[in-house]
Image (cartoon, rainbow, N blue to C red):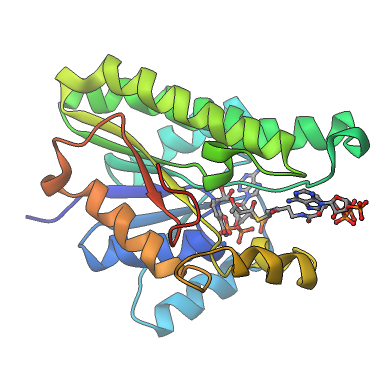
Length: 246
Ligand code: CAA
Ligand code: NAP
């Protein structure tokens, strides 16, 4: 039987693209969210198509509740019922706390944490009514352990773990699971933006001795979205090369 829609927020980024591909490999009809009027969107769709992936796009700024609610409504009406939601969109605005300004705090809280409310809130009741759903929230090792220079990011990503556990309890009996993935350092633009010498020091502390690959996160996401993972809910799955063991 054909699978329904999987929506991935920030679906055109480093991890987002890999998550889209892993979900598509498992038979989901994938919709990648991006910011409205995102110039490289058509190019991204064409590149994925040349690799054999047929992705659709849904525009919305995840910091804006009304845009997210409209996006969910449009996908459900025009593409199909959304059974999988991956809350993946996120940003960093790293600075030592004493140098961090309110704008850096607010940007990270609204993009990384408010977004989870904004996209999940209009969709979760539909999943619960239908008796099936999979929500996967992308947190971070730095939300689990805290990170020097990331008071904003660590707070938002830790907040994701809280909402994951609360929602998991609210919808457990409705066939909907809610889980968090806490990736370590993965080789995407977000990590490559760290100053090289700082990044090298970080990689040196990873027991596996390398950055993670985006497809390693994508495949874990696809597993959590699958029928096989129906007994996993409210969990935080750490995938960090041994950087933080808990
Ligand atoms: N622990 C303790 N001290 C540290 C430290 C650490 N982890 N990192 C830096 N310091 C110290 C430095 O040694 C330096 O000390 P001195 O003043 O005594 O020399 C001081 O803090 C200032 O360091 P910087 O020169 O680096 O300060 P800066 O203002 O130029 O930069 C920073 C600060 C932006 C936070 C920078 O250190 C940095 O980018 N750190 C990495 C933060 C990080 O890991 N971000 C992850 C981004 S990717 C991501 O978030 C994905 C994910 O989920 C994993
Ligand atoms: P990325 O390549 O920068 O991707 C982030 C995506 O989110 C981009 O497509 C970005 O779009 C989108 N986005 C940002 N703000 C948005 C908004 N307001 N509305 C809609 N989309 C928005 O970063 P990544 O490494 O793939 O990270 C993806 C997620 O994984 C993030 O939540 C990140 O915190 C988390 N994570 C990453 C790592 C890592 O090591 N890379 C580790 C742990 C967790 P634009 O390009 O248009 O800005």
